[in-house]
Image 1 (tube, rainbow, N blue to C red):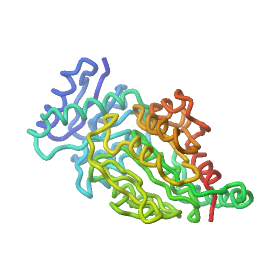
Image 2 (image 1 turned 120 degrees about the horizontal axis):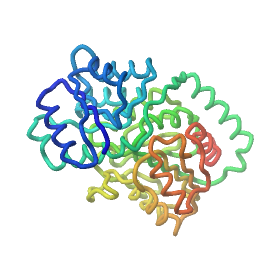
Image 3 (image 1 turned 180 degrees about the vertical axis):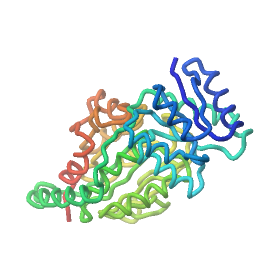
Length: 357
């Protein structure tokens, strides 16, 4: 049985969370804390299988606690409980950058927290977090490192540009650990990349716009939340919005974003399988599929189905660099991966495969 620390300043929310967790025989709440300072004192003395952490608390909030854990190098597997307001989304992304592994959306009322939907989401996310890798303590200078790497990649690709012919598209899938991992990939892509990049990152409604904005600020390529009808352009990164399935469809000789509203698949919405399968009848000379950190097997069936009709090049993230080695492992075990590379090399391999303009 996994031991959990619950950190929330609301007595009612603590009770609801503890009731949900303790009614599942996989978990037990070992301790409770009402703010970050209390939690820090506990984490300095004890080890937990996971920490459920609120954001807004007195004395020390959730983000401040994550910073202290980084500073003191205290290992912890942290799951945030967040709101889906615009400010809440930005705060959640801050938490993921500081080492939180995943998050659940906190409903507005205690009554809504007692629903089956919230209970299922909380427990499923907790199950992923307890099996994931905890906080990492490396703090590279992202902007400086990525700019340097991007220039290096452009130089490499420019030398072998004739070896990268054809009209290609990059289709990337990621889940748990993805928002942070994408910051090690997208900012390293050169602005003159000779292909569009389409991403399915498993996130609920309300969070992907903030993720796109953050990545856009860090990157040479333009990054945006994909809107219905967007025409795909080379050198632009499109992130699927949460709560809908992203498809790529032909539109007047070009390709466009089209959302559909089928039920969740592989337990997620958006589901990368739909993205991959929508490319079956496309005229791209090659689809570069990238599968990164995440729980489960989303992407595998879609790539299998896509491979029946299209030429593919499949890049899977290497196990030791994944927060959760689920989705890439599924692709590797299915014999689909052409390359298995560490996170830091994914941008280079994408660029080497699609070329620059």
